[in-house]
Length: 179
Image (cartoon, rainbow, N blue to C red; front, top):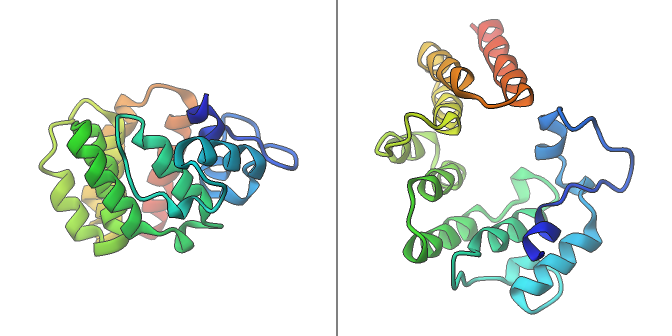
């Protein structure tokens, strides 16, 4: 239940259609503040802000990380160094290449896309569409447009639903217009 409270998308206003990923992922301010606070309280033992959460004790570290994300009004205000530290802790109690991939996303915000790409390229996740999508994003940030397009295409080939495919097609269109 706490995981649900932290990850539920319940905007205070009218929600976008569920097949639209961008507004859901990028508009944290629209998430229901009461549900975020309740979930953070369950995991941290205190009311907001969740940024006071500093320890991942078990495999349920994901919701603690989500709480820190939801504490910030936008991506730029997110405490990415704290998120990297929480992922480090999560990797010690629940090591997996998917957790390492998510950690690399936070590393990109702290140390830049080159550092994150070096971490991503060490992972054995070739069948996972998000691996390729994240590679594409990092390569795009590094100005490596052709490699980014190839990575996005690999992600598109592996994407599991229409919303993911539409999102990736949009990224490919953006690349071609930049190009």
